[in-house]
Length: 113
Image (cartoon, rainbow, N blue to C red; front, side):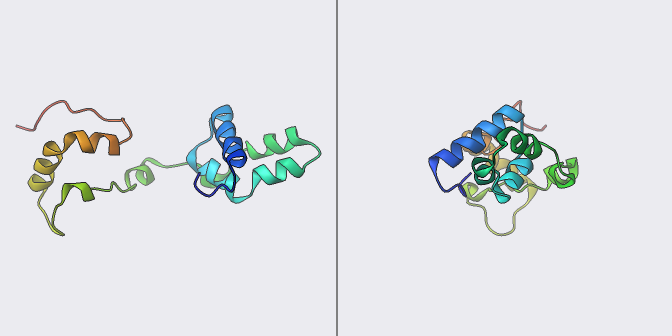
């Protein structure tokens, strides 16, 4: 959403995302194709919005692609190379900082035995 030029344009894309349940990729495609500007210039605004709602092949995200999304772990202050146990220890130590990085999709249940 940082690529929007005005608060009005941002509000348009936010409304479209919420109204249509758009995925991030759909929203990026709409922004890249300037759906907001094209809709404002269009005589048939409803048809433009319906056309923008049609999913494209590149809009879907496979489970493999979702797993590949990187997590930024700079706040752990680990060196360039570290072991899994070092990572685990640093994460548990900084758990309160780490969970917001995961967008609230995870919870801490307990340590490994």
